[in-house]
Length: 439
Figure 1 (cartoon, one colour):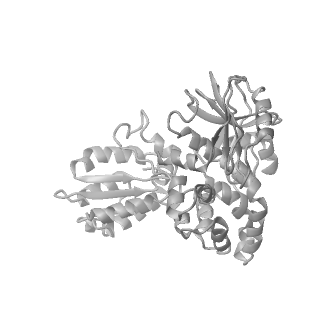
Figure 2: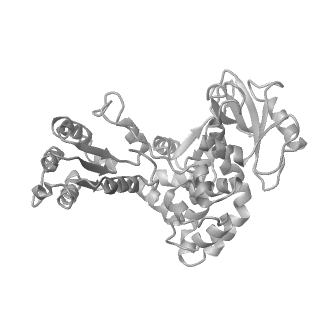
Figure 3: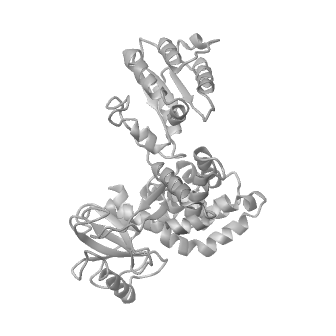
């Protein structure tokens, strides 16, 4: 089971074992310095579990995971089902690379002979996904489960918000259940933020801090690079400057780590011509908001000046939202039912050049990042009451003429928060975007 941090994986499994009402072990690994320290915590967890043979672990100190897991098999019931949960499994693999193979061996020889469900949970998306790859011990042995955050449609339903306001709430919460649960149904964005930003213990504030602390040491190069991207830097050179002139080799390594962990997305412009103009963006909507407005100002919030942070959000919200909503809109368009976008649209991205002239918000293609055919171009106008007017259309058509693979026959799409579009332009609004997630 995998999913990003703070999405509720552990809570979901905890609820499952409680409802199952069977003997179970719930062991959560942590970033211990040695395998011996992990083993000691595991022994303590089993000894305090509801497994019928938990007493076998009293006073025991197995020196290897092989011995500990074999002893665990002896503690399991043979006449009724049980559940074993190993949470934060990537920590164990990082400390002991042989853990994965040991677990597979003991599972095949011992655990599989008992009516036990073994659930391995992890927040390192790349590592957890790789566990089932060809050549790995658990290849084709495990059933994968991905726990996504709440969708924009889920957020809207839970908070009883209109479609446009639901998307705004999603940009702030990222669909994290703990953060959404703090938001009173029916409250607007300003109502929620005015309380959450002033409370140093609110889920909105602490979730980002805890997620980053679990991934990187403070002030490490990946942490510094991520904060530069979160502050709005998107290109390699601008990130390097914002990160304090970090050497190119170090920046390459930090960006590779961030993209491997799926914390940052590296995107290329979509057209029929190859491009190397990579842009970097924080993948998680909640973390985008936290890094832009909350993380840099925790000190002022903790000293009781959350009003300063709130004023900063108020003054920058419209411009920040206009950029931050684009990845959400692109993903929404990819999910639209067949027929709502031009045929053969398989990829939705954007197009830009080094000078951002032209820069197109939305580009559809039959594949990416180098398409055989461009299926549509589009613009995002996410203002409170901003119709897509003739001036917007003229600008988009001018940029369309500069897009490799597009011509005067390429359809035009406008995505607007409010208002309509000029004749001849397919217009999509917040309701259509949320419908894509419901379907």
